[in-house]
Amino acid sequence: MPHRFPLLSEESSDKTPSLTMEIIFRLKVKDAMMTNLRTANKKDTFRVIQKVMRNNDISGVPILEDNRLVGMVSVSDIINALDRGYVEESVEPYMTKQLIVLEDDMPLSFAVSYYNKYPYRRFPVINKNKEFVGVLTTKDVLSTILNEMNNEITLLESQIFHDKVELPNQIIKEYIIKQFDFENAGHASFRLKKLLKEKEVSRKIIRRASVAAYEMEINVAIHSNGGKISFILEENSITIITKDTGPGIKDVAQVIEEGYSTANDWIRSLGFGAGMGIPNTKRVSDEFKIESEMGKGTTVKSVIFLEDTDEGE
Ligand SMILES: Nc1ncnc2c1ncn2[C@@H]1O[C@H](COP(=O)(O)OP(=O)(O)O)[C@@H](O)[C@H]1O
Ligand SMILES: [Mg+2]
Image (cartoon, rainbow, N blue to C red):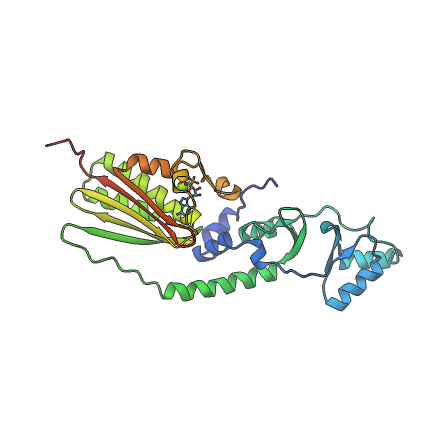
């Protein structure tokens, strides 16, 4: 399906708190939709569907053929049928066939943008094989977001972050990176850049360290379940370490290759996923290492020496 990345109108993205943003990017349509819904067949009459609606207290019935969604019948379609005298006829010629659907793997932010774009309060949901899997209503979206916010706040309260104890001549900074937190992704590497400027590190080194820190930070945000990034500035080197909590990398040798990426369409539509992050990080680093265990997580370490080793000797 050709989707453009959504957009919450510019206005709303300015005003929407970042936690809400993060949640609607992270959650998928399938996390919020209603499943196990009553459906009907296109040969069913309006009368039959009216009974289904009344008995189940619902206002729209998806019409399926071999698990594929072929139409929808709403209360107003039933009223029209009663009015115009075809309530005993099959719904096939009358049902709404031009449907705006969501895919179950889309981020909830897509759905939110649909509510801004279309006048409907409920959208049928299909899966990759175009099979009907559920319906998403505004009510479900809201209650799912509220529930998730509640969980997040509980987590945040337990996560007061302290900088580590430093040795003399050592500065350590650590930042939490949350999954799909595009609003804050890049902040940690920006702060590293500022710190290095303050410490009058050369522009060339700052550039290399910024590339490494940014790519590493973004990778944790888009490819992992979240983690942290640490910067250790010492007299002769800057060390950048990311640690995340999974899912891990199956083949470390493969991700070092240029152009290899597992980023999906919506991540690519945000401008990520060229498969150059790890190769570029390796290129700018004097030492580079990835350790990863499937299901456990990934640790990436980049060391950049502050002086060119053969200079000033
Ligand atoms: N922290 C991570 N956890 C799991 N997989 C990762 C992580 N970082 C990178 N990867 C994997 O390595 C691939 C290559 O990363 P990268 O070179 O930065 O390219 P891109 O981010 O553009 O996909 C990613 O597509 C992803 O599959
Ligand atoms: Mg990357």
